[in-house]
Length: 319
Image (cartoon, rainbow, N blue to C red):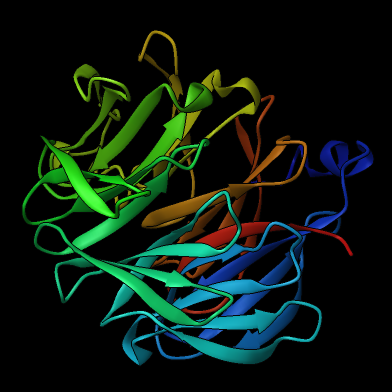
């Protein structure tokens, strides 16, 4: 059980006011956590099996992948009201919003396609054939390259966002899940859940630069399954969720060495930082809670109960 020994110190430290929004797969809800009180302050209903979640640039809209409703829902975060649905293809799981704040790139797991939707016209502008069971999505900071990872094909697919065409496919280890561009977009990282690794690619050449493996003391290697990851300020370190190992790894982003492991809740999926990145919130699917990590000390400081099977997480500043 996570102790709250450091909680008083954490709460006494000035922090940016804001919220962490968490999708709950089995409850068809979103839990909203205050980053000041570390408590759930609102719960909103969504479509069926919400997973991926992200905000528009001005935080006036929140996009939610309602996977079993075959829709991306657009919600008003001030009221929790669903404004409308966007066409998304079947079983949308993860997505990414282009830097233009308009185009959503959506992984459709059941259709082996990436769907591109214009959020203003609410129309599909492209459907791109990718590998089997696409899941992870990323877009470069300059908006020129999008990535889809396919779980069964074991590839990262590189998409030219001007032509909406594939220009490269790179192999990764078994069951890739999450992808991110880092270091100004010069690197692209992909986690492989069953392979137990994170692969680092050079963005310009698509060549593999490194591979990160994990070994948690007392945990069988089969249970060490990297999924979501997030980077600290300056992209100096990555925090990697290791699934049913119930740990988050801390990785030096320059050396690709694992520096630490942090015990969290059961079946950790994804995570989100608060605004100044002093706190990290992890979604723990099986235990139905969120672990709050103090980033400086790399210690868990509180467990927050949310809905059943929390999956995605996103930060929103206080309005």
